[in-house]
Image (cartoon, rainbow, N blue to C red; front, side):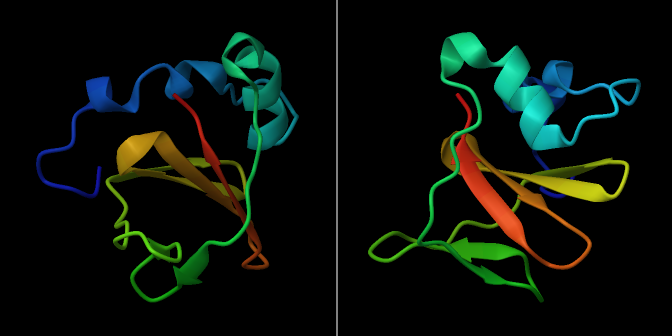
Length: 99
């Protein structure tokens, strides 16, 4: 956890969508296991400050990460408003709302 008041409960069901035993990347696992909620649907427009991992979207206040987990080579960052970012080792990333 990154935020001092963050709890596992605030992450919702997302951690249950991921399995180290499933060889697929996180986005595919979430898309499959969260199908009833819309799956993984990334949307663009976010800018990432790589030094603080703050996400910025035009017209919205900045989002700072609340928690982080890893799935093999991927890092998953949880933000307020059910925003989830998956970042790859090459620095590329996708952002989706998973609520």
